[in-house]
Image (cartoon, rainbow over all chains, first blue to last red; front, side, top):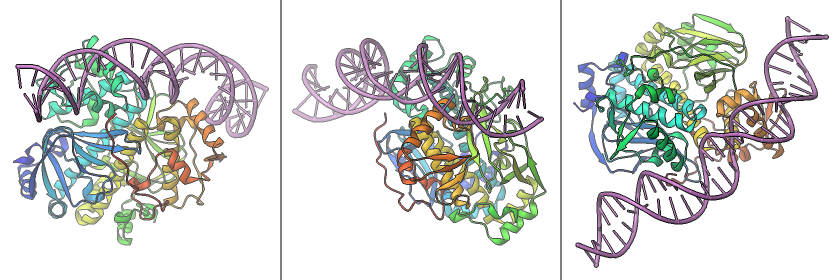
Length: 252
Length: 252
DNA sequence: CGACACGTTGAGATATATCAAACGTGGTGG
DNA sequence: CCACCACGTTTGATATATCTCAACGTGTCG
């Protein structure tokens, strides 16, 4: 049941037992990929998609000078390139952060599945739209938040997402990313990330040991980061306090 | 044939005559919306989706202080909230920039259509993934480009998108956005946008009169903005020179 | 005519980047 | 076992991009 982790806790899109079985049967290969390697590149035409079974992966866009901007971080249970199924060509690179195991599903099989099972098709569509909702929040994060808020927002996101797949103990979770990676997520230099993280530590909002991150005051961190988890569309939100109305203001 | 403009020039997702007809029949209402008004808000549960027939619209996220970040700009022929069909709840606000006319399609009809016509379903899926691809490019733009490059990149994007729907004469197009709007797109203050635009004018890369923007040297502007149009997935790219290989560099 | 939205300009403040260097730590090979 | 190296983190000093505040001009619209 490799697909068992797919779409975990996503309210309206949870998969039925039957749908899990169908997806499992469509897996043609399970591949182990070393850390820090690039699997696909922008422009690649691909006829399979894959989801993460274990490990941390990332999607990113690089400019001519090699500056890298991550556009998504994927954790177990998430497709890394399901959008390539309708799109057929990738517009960004895909690679690993840590050593990862991925399960591969040919597009031809997805084709057949969504015709025979429209509901499953809708759920796969939903899954790609979850990415889009996260993208939007990343735009907001980078465009309108301070460095301190950006890093806080990102830490909140990772916490909530990992919590949803049972990878936290309620406060602590494993985050195998370097400060440079976080900079690539937040549009910051790694040096500045370092300084911001120290601030969070000084405010007792964050601590880390061996890549195990603790957020002793999630609500406080969420406030600093202007974080509201609604965009993750979870059936069981971590924070009871949410969906607060936000004032619509004038443009800057 | 209101739907005639949908997915124009998107290679693999162009609609057949029959599909256009089906969508047209599903339109229940055509609504005129005044400029600068908000149609839907984050958290709204909606059971219809709409596409732009005429006008400029935007999707945006606002923080507690009213700072606004646009996450998408929509022009005629584009759905503004098709993602709400699988998602059912919106994670951002939707509003107009100029007075607009939109065509409304109930989700119940889309439901029926995609079951009976899986190919159409795939194309609608594609359409929402186009948004996601644009989101990714916006993250890159804001995260890794200078103010000058951000504005250039955005101008290139709007030019190419409007060109694809026949709304340029090869150099000039109508862009009814204020400098503050552009700031909300690029994560900049309106004052800084003003200064950046003056730079572009001084470099003869841009001129404007009555909201009619001219880009006399598109290639030059694209270079400044690190712009490559691949992510727009057009059948007839504007620029012959593209798909150049970009070096993958080390993280910052 | 006044109010308002938008663009423009100036001066000063500040957040973040850049450059440079040191430090710990784990792994590796001799 | 030690020397060494690669990698990530940390710190300091300085540069610079962008923001903020403030003011003014211009056109439009009621």
